[in-house]
Length: 85
Image 1 (cartoon, rainbow, N blue to C red):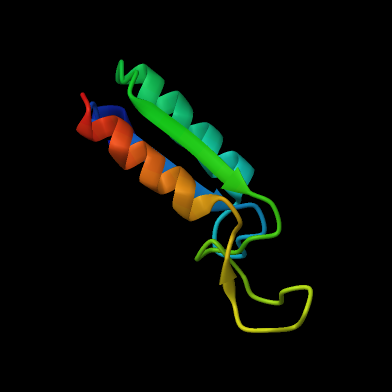
Image 2 (image 1 turned 135 degrees about the vertical axis):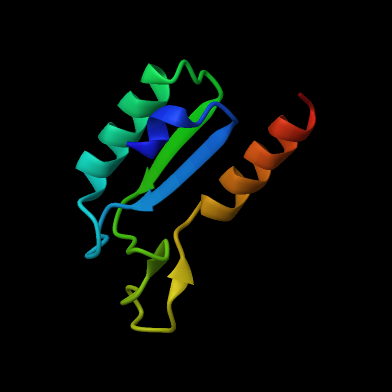
């Protein structure tokens, strides 16, 4: 319920294969609550095949966990955008 009180800019990032939270449902609830709060400065992004930490735990090569492709550049772009406001 506290998402309905947030009016500052928000960037929400989630892995679609998160075993800790139901990603699709959670992001829908967050988006609806932010809209109810009148917040127009938010972005919501989800990453296929990524887990809770936005990493691929079992990469295609079976190597160490890596960040979901595009997450870091997307996050950096959001910070640059917010800094210009």
